[in-house]
Image (tube, rainbow, N blue to C red):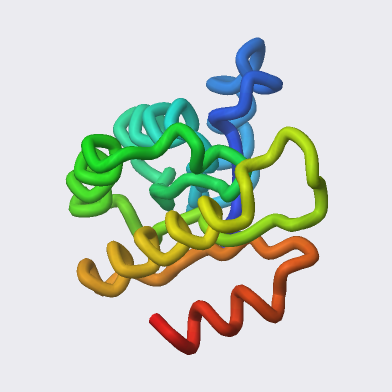
Length: 145
């Protein structure tokens, strides 16, 4: 059995051949795929993939560079999606301090990382963590939460 634990087949790069690629993977022995959300669009598309393919499961979460799009309404929506049977984790969540420009400020990343960790804890789901140039802070937050 081959188990793909971290895929982003919702990415626009797969728009031209997504369906044939995913079915071909399954036909060639990949029995399970976890598509990992990274943006709100990615979360929506992950749910679509979970519903379309019986062997695709999902992780629902927002990557640190996309957390500027989050608010209370969206986190409530994500919670409902996390309760779906085929949602197996909360992710891709975490911290990314590598780039100073164009990414969400560190305080905002930390706040939404905590919120998404609490969501995972409340729903008893594992997390998929993204950490880049931020491992010390990630471990501090994990210890605190």
